[in-house]
Length: 412
Image (cartoon, helix red, strand yellow):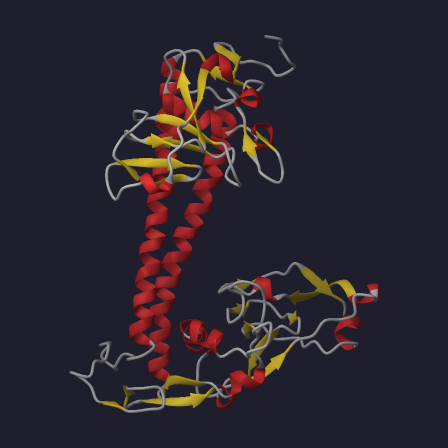
């Protein structure tokens, strides 16, 4: 094969994919033939069902070849039935399979995928792609070990985030409906006194209060797009898509002082809770808190001048009420919320601010744990990206010492 300008590391080879693999499409399997158990069936995006027979053994690399997932690399980890939505990669010589799984994942999908209306991967296109790899299986194994350890650390961190998120969901259900007493105990009707209310049974220490009695609601506005002097200033301007249960530290767009003065938008102070009044998908009803002074478009509403409620308690309560608030939307062609609808909405609130603060503290602890693990996840993902770029190109070679150091980094 012809050499290009890419420097091939010493001890490495460059081959076209069809020199490494024998490619074969999976078999057709009508969904009527699926069963509730048996061998897993791999389609274009992983396991899609089960079947009583298998057509390939475990550890086969699969390339999704039809639809929007075309070019996605999977691997069957056990005996499985592979449908014709995947191409099976059979090795022509002895290799470390895990190494080549990671190596194939570095290929630009645009090189593999053809078609626009119906994206697909065809074998003849795969045959035109080349990759570099170490000839030594031991070096392949060392690289695969490092990347596998990093993936294990990523999976462990993702599991912790999911665990803390489940804990938070359970806490929200308990703390925002029953609260906690001065001793830190969650109330129950067996241990504490409850009362009837417009929102059902609530602790006797709680109230049902209209949002209108808790905050002043103010919507934002949009300076004219026709006047360039209104835009690209230094005043943050929030859109509904940026309101997503987050602490807003920056925005995609900014307006000028002139744009602020000449429009109906409002400069909300840092700490203001924002809610998306409308937007596509799941946007409507989501909330965020400003970590900066910012303006918003008219599709956002800010909760100002809070009374009888802490900012954090109101934020968590609005988060908990998300589905009900969405149901509150008007019945027009595009379902929207409005300040008028929100003002008439009742919330369950502890009368004692100290109880609200106790609940806020519990949520802050679990949120801090989630944020910590999210930071770790982001760091691990960056490490993996760098490792794949360095190790799978031969830019960085792996000896036993580097293997040990890399494993320690991944597991730190």
